[in-house]
Structures are given as structure tokens and as C-alpha cells.
Amino acid sequence: MNIIAVALAGLTALVCFISYLWVPKTKIFPISLGIYLLLEATVAALVISTGGTSSPFIALWGLACIFSGIFGLWGSLPILIAVSTFVANQYIIGDLSIQAIILVVLSSLLPLIASFIIWHNKSEKDELDSDNKAYQNLANKLSEVASKSEIVINAIGDGVIAIDSQGIIQLINPAAQEIIGWGKQDALALNYKSVLKLLDTKGNELDATTDPIQQVLNINQQIRTTSLTLLTKSEKKLNISLVVSPISQVGSGVIAVFHDVTKEKDDERKQAEFISTASHEMRTPVASIEGYLSLTLGPQTAQIDSRARDYILKAHASAEHLGHLLQDLLGVSKAEDGRLPNKPKVVNIITFVHEIVQGFEQKASAKGIDLIFSPIPTESTEKHITPAYFVNLDNDHIREIMNNLVENAIKYTPNGEIVIDIEGDEERVVISVKDSGIGIPAEDMPHLFQKFYRVDNKNTREIGGTGLGLYLSRRLAEILGGRVWAESIYGKGSTFFVELPRISSQEASNLTEKQTIQTKQEADKIAVNESEHVVIEPAQVGVTNGPINYVPRSQSLTPEQIAAYVTKQRALAQQQQIAVQTSNRPQSITIPVRGPQ
Image (cartoon, rainbow, N blue to C red; front, side, top):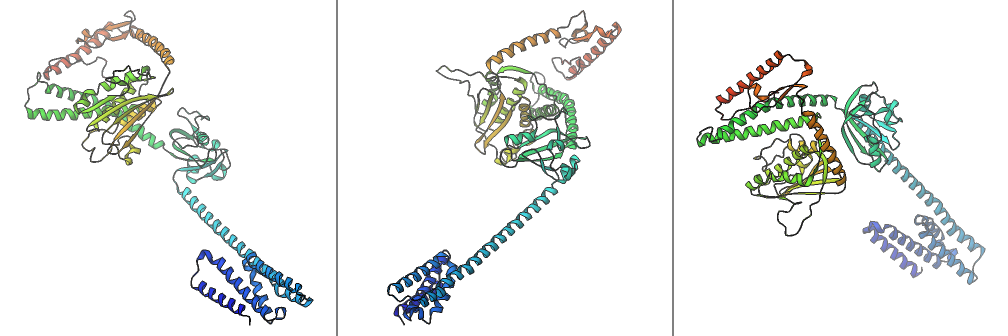
């Protein structure tokens, strides 16, 4: 036996043993290929050393060739090269016979062909089976996810409608079917406008610019609204809360989630009516209590000891707090039911806000806080040009917002500074109130502008408040066509921003001229002609500085009726004087003859 065959056999056995003990997973194929090629080389050496084509081990060579297909071309090419070399060598030495060619074909080429047929088909079958199995697994998983999603969507109490980019309804859950009165089979594949009929506050159908679903399809941003009405299939109108969210890219489709808030809206209306009535009725007695307490604290009206003064001071502070609460409640109630007046007037926001800030300088100074108004430097050796930012908005609303923000900044800043700044562009003005106070925790930021919400931690428990100031500021900003938001780092201070729509200087000039003319016309209407009215002077009803009453002559009042009215008002005035004398108040209290406003 040839020594080469023995050496190759030994090397093959050694490599197999080492591979059995240890082989990296990433190297299995190349090591297996190497072992197979060593085995082929060992058999080839054995065949050549024992007679070549007449060797008794020629069948072993054919058997080894059958496994070459496992390794593809990497296993077949070395065999083809070896066989071609053998045939060429036999031809050169003149020992290539027909019998040798037949043996080569039978022992080498046929096993190679058989190997490809066996292993290649099996590999394809295994791969196909593997692909089918993977596909089946994926299909099962998708089916399972779809089933779970359908269960979740059907279990949601809110109405859910999925709409594609063309506005066609692709999904509607049972809650939506119950709310709008449409069945699943009737609603699917229809345009959403035929099923989800949305109306504005005036009962008009929405156009493309006000339709939240169309807007989300265009801008791909979520929209929330509670101001729309839904017209059901039975023509019933429902107040709804609607959230429209985009699915992915612009125009891909949206998910509309809505629920009926008619009862909630009705409860809110009743609650607002109660709060408004209670606040209005309680405001007058609370003001009287506060006034009498103020008189008691005056050294000219009462003599009290220090202990009693301390009690009265605390009662006075509580009365003031209650008065602020009632005023805030009344303001919130008016804002929610649309009773807040909105009388726009052109104003330069720089000078207007500066006047408001100046009103807080004493309060900030008493607490040791620097109140800085950045647009107008207090000390400057260089000339400073202050920009003019004009707005045409209700001045009282702006004042209320700024009062709330500056007062809060002073309240929640133990020491340091508060900086008020104003910036803007051609379309908007942004007022910022930045303090170095206690800051707001991140978890409280989303709820900051909600009604009655107050940050509750160790730093705020000693600070009073109603939880209505920021809510009212937000509502007032929305009425003005702007917005309010805040940024804060807990422990390092907060910054509140107010954004308002700006007008140009030319537009401000034109509007100011028109408003001046309008104000003069209104003043002329108030100036009542005595030939058309009966004028009742304050002295006629027993007061010195009350308002004048005008009774239209068109009512054809008789002199007796006018005299009875005067007598009644005089009696009320006398009662007021008696009450003043009883309370030892040195000056008179004047009650308007028209009653409380």
C-alpha cells in the first residue's frame, strides 16, 4: 500500500477527531469540506497505488463521489479536476483504453451526476419546506395579531373609524356603529362624509379648511376637538369629542376616535350656570366684609389692640382670597359659555405690558426680587430704539393674562429675578415671563393649564392659589386668537410664553382712526337729550354722587309714576345712610340706583 495513502488516511482521521471535540459554529462548512476533500484524496491515492482503473477500491471512489453534491461546486470541482488529470496522464503514457474510459465514467462522472440529482433536489425541497414553514409561521402570527387587534378595537367603548387616503372607510368598530347608527356592511367602502357627518357650532357642514379629517390627511398631524356636532343616521345631533390621528406618511390615511359628550356638555353648562350665579351673588357680601374689615383696621375708624389686629388681618387676607376665587370663578364661567366681552382696541404691546409690569414693582421689591422689563432698559448710556409691536385685541383680556403670569412668577420665586421680554415677527408677538423660582416638575407640565390644577409638592403647599389663573389665561389667549405655553426645569425656574397675532403699523394707524370715530359716535349716543327723556338726578333720590337715571318719554310715564320711582329710590338711599351710621363709617356708601351690575 502506498505510504501517501496511509499518511492521508492518518491526517483525515486526526482532523475528524479534532473536529469532533471542538469546532466553531461559523466554521462548520469549510471544515466539513476540508475533511471530505482529504477523504477523496485518501481514496484516490489508494486507488492509484493499487492498480488505477483495475484497483479493487474503485467502487469506494465512486461511493465517495456520490457525497460531493452536498458541498455543491466546492465538492465537485476538485473531483472533476482529479479525474481530468488522471485521464490526461493515461492518454500521454498511452495506457488509455476503452475499458478505462468506461470505468472512469461509471466510477466518477455518473456518481457526480447522481450526487447533484440527489442532494440538489433535496436541498431545494428542504429550502422549499423551510420557506413554506416560515411563510406559514408568519401567516399564523399575522392572523393572531389581526385577531387580537380586532378584539381590542371591538372592545373599545369609543367609536373607531379607519379611513384611507381617498376618504374611504376601511374599518368601523361596534361602538362607532352604535353611536352613528350605521351598520358595518353599510358603512364600509363608503366615503366618510356620508357616514361621519360633522357640523360646526352653528350647525353648518364643514368645508375642507375646517374638516379635521381632511386637515390630518393634508398635514399629517394629530387634531383634537370637542367643539363639533355629529349628525347620526336618524338625524339626531350629538356633541362629540374627536381625535383624528395620521396612520403613517402624509395621505396614507387616518384613524378617527370619537365619543358622545352630550351629557358631559350639559353637566358642564349646568355647573357653569351654578358657579356663575353663586359667584355673582356672593361677590357683593364678600366685598362688604372686606370693606368693613378694612375700616376696622383704619386707626381713624376703630381702636383695637395688637392681638385683635392680628386676627382681623388674617380674616381680611381670607376675605381677599375668597374675593379673588369668586372673581376667577366668574371669569372662567363667562369664558366657557362665551359671555366674556371681546372689544378689540389697537395698542402697542411694548408700552401696554410695561405699564402692567410697573404695577408689580412694589410687590416684587417687597419680596427682594428684581423685576426686569427687557424691551425698555432702565439704565443705558446709548440710545435705545424700542420696536413697536401693535395688536388689535381686547386690552382687558391681555391685562388679565399678564397679571396672572407676573403675579404667579412673583409668588413662586423666593428670590432672584423675573425677566419680561417681548419678541415677534411680521405675524405674531411673543411675550415671555421668565423667573428663577422653584420650577415645575416634568410630570405636572401636561396638566398645568387645566382647571383647578395646582402643583402639589413641599415647595407649593405653603403658597395659596385657586388653580384657575393659568386655565383662565389659556382660555383668554384662545379667545384672542393666540396661545399660552410654558417651559420649566424643576428647581431652576420657569418661563411662560404668550403668543398673540400682530398687525402692521399701517393697519394699526387705520384701525386706530376708525376706533376713535366709533368711540365718539358711541359717546354721542350716550349723551341723552332731555327733550326725549325724563332725567332723574342723583339728588332727587337722596344721594350726592350717584349715577343719573334716564326714563324714556316714549314709555308715557305719568308724573305720578315718576314720583313713585323717585320716592322708592329715596327710601333705598335712606336705608343706605342708616346702615352707614350704624357701622360708624365716616364717609357715605353710594349704591347705584340701577342695582348691582
